[in-house]
Image (cartoon, rainbow, N blue to C red; front, side):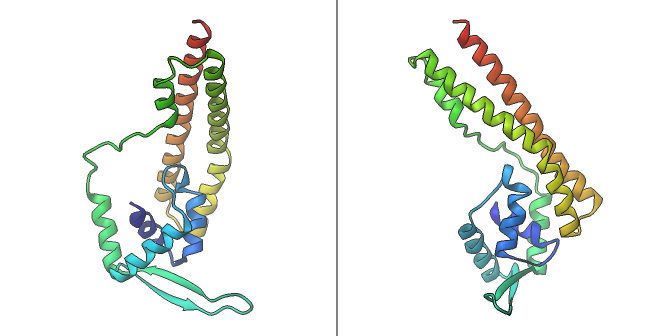
Length: 182
C-alpha cells in the first residue's frame, strides 16, 4: 500500500523522499504512515520498476537532493489501483480491545486507569483532527496544487477520523461507567 501512497503524492508534483515523509506526516499519517527508511526503500523499488524516475539537484552548502517524479507507468498503476474496488475490509488490530478482552482478572482500579488514560489520548487526537489536521489539509492543498475535489476528499478522511474518535470516546465512557458500577 505504501507504493500507492507515494505514487499518489508524486502524481501531484515532484518530491524528494524527505518531502514525501513530511507531507505524509501532515496528511495520511493518521491512517497510513511510514518510516523514512520504508519510503526510500519503496522509492527505489518503484524506480527499478519504471513507475517513477529521479534526478539529483545540486544544492549549495547542503547535500544534493534526489527528486522523484511519476512516470506514465506509475500513473497507470495508480489509476488501476484507484479503480479496483476493495472487496474485503481491512483487519482491525486494536491493542486496547485485546487487552480489555482478557482483563477479567485485572484489578478494577488498574483497568480503569488504563481506560481513562486511553480516553485522554483519544480526546487529544480528536482535538488534533478538529484543529491542526484541518489546517494541514488547507496547507497541503496549496502546496500540492490540489483540486477542490482533492481537498474535499482529504477533508472526508479527516472527518472519518473525527467520527472514529467520537465513537471510541463514547465506547470508553460506556465501558468505564459499566466497570465503575460493578
